[in-house]
Length: 292
Ligand code: ARG
Image (cartoon, rainbow, N blue to C red; front, side, top):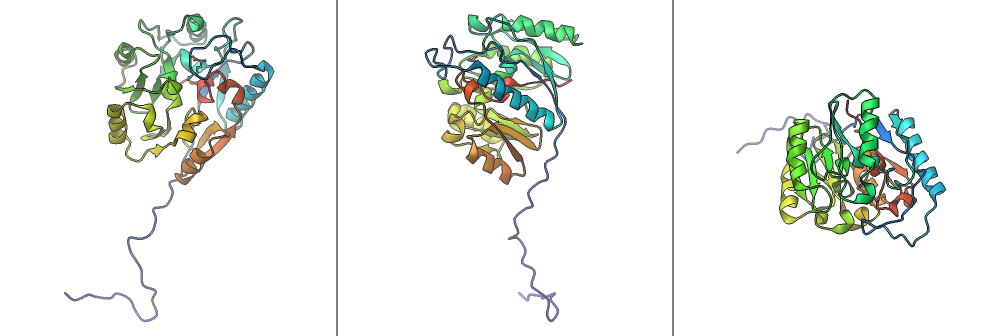
């Protein structure tokens, strides 16, 4: 075989196939979030392994950290709506658990723990008072965006600790979106949103060990390019992050995960959420996305 050289005298040879692909440019989209100030936040019962009612809690520190989170969203150009906190509902700050909104259709929540049950109706009334006309309350235990994550194409749905698997088909019927059930197996990662988050359409980050072997295979098949989180990333609730398609708001301890997402072209934005973590929550738990 003869090889033909296209190089003229003095030309630099061009070596094909060894250049690294350029990091994609990530474009943010403006979001609308619903948050609840942690005015009555405390840890007075234990419904997940993070909660220890004997440890001291500073409500004022929680309010300060939560306010920083809200300010961060606003600085990034997002709109934050607020719901009035209620005395006696210390976990109401975790607004992600109270509704799943896709294309203006609302599916409310039904909590597993009786201590949180009353939160669902406060949110139902908020939706009705704020212009939502399609509001359906679920029959089955359904902790909303705690266990439901919208990828833009599929609704990933966790079960194992909180949300009833039958709530998955209920969500598919009410929201009219394809639902993919995933089995959670580690009690520390009792909600899907502490084990996985969406970075951008078709790109997620997750901690494989939080899922059953079959669900790990599903995730590998759906998201072959996913960012794979380490045990350390998961243990600071690093996966409880919020992406707008470019900026990724995540706990300040999640340094390794931040490096990984930065390699993919995202911009990590750190927040300190340590006080709310004592209840098993992070940035995402405090943030319900309103997809109108
Ligand atoms: N203490 C709350 C509970 O156990 C924390 C909820 C966190 N929310 C979330 N979306 N993961 O229910």
